Every structure is written in structure tokens, then in C-alpha cells.
Amino acid sequence: MLNRIVLMGRLTANPELKSTTTGKSVTSFSIAVERNYNKSGEERKVDFFNVVCWNYTAEFVCRYFAKGNMIALEGKLQSRTYQANDGSTRYVTEIVADTVSFTGERVQKANNNNKDSSSTTSEQPPLPSQPDFENMPIDDDLPF
Image (cartoon, rainbow, N blue to C red; front, side, top):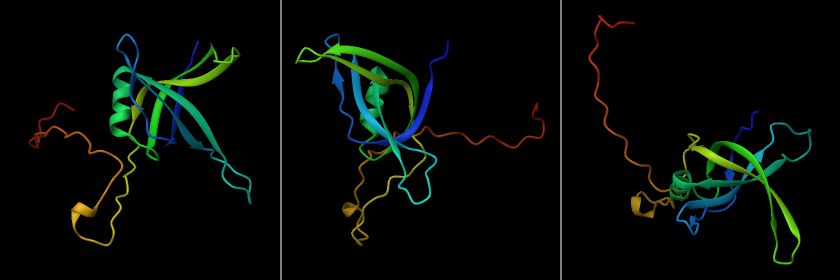
């Protein structure tokens, strides 16, 4: 059997990191995904999906993503039920994401026509520094 889902959309709110009673990190959020098609003269349709991330993935999302950021994710579709406070049974279908990625989209910085970098803001925190890679010498004796 196969249960995999791949989506790319925009976060509808800032994700919030929480912990379970056993200390596991968890976050839940929703993403808006535009449909690829629309009838002429109509507005584009958007679907909203609930997403849950656990452990390191939850910490990663909360650290590097904010409302409006584009996110790509892969996971599985899961449905569950729970008892609401009023005693009714509620049904939930959500994506449990095990892989999240940046989409390559650059976050636009707000600049009030001022060249001073202190007036520039961004909703997305800086990316972690990348390790320096050593340039390889050009060698005609490569094995491929």
C-alpha cells in the first residue's frame, strides 16, 4: 500500500512550537495551495490543508518559516477522531509531514526608500551558514 502526499503552498499563520507531555516537539499549521486550473473569468481556487510536524521537522518549520512563506512538504495523509468538549465526535484529516523544504523563493525585504540596512526587515530568519567547500583542481585523469 502507498500513502504519500507532496504539496507546495503558503503558510496561513505563523507555526507555533509545542511539546507533548513526553517532551516531543510538535507543530500544526495549515497551508494554502492554489489549484493549477481555473475557468476563464473566475478567480483562482485555493485548497487549505492541515499539516502536523513532529520532532526535528517541527523545530525546523518553526525556526525558518512564517506566515506567507512558501513551503514544500512530503508526508502521509492521516485521519483521526477525537471527542470535543461538547461530547461530539470530531473527524480530522491532516498531512503528517516528515520532510519539509524551502522552495527557492526569496523573501522580499521591505525597504522604505532608505539605503540604510537597519530599515530593512524580513519575516524569515536568516538561513544557517553553509560550510565552505573546497574547489577541486581540474584534472584530466578523472575516472568518469
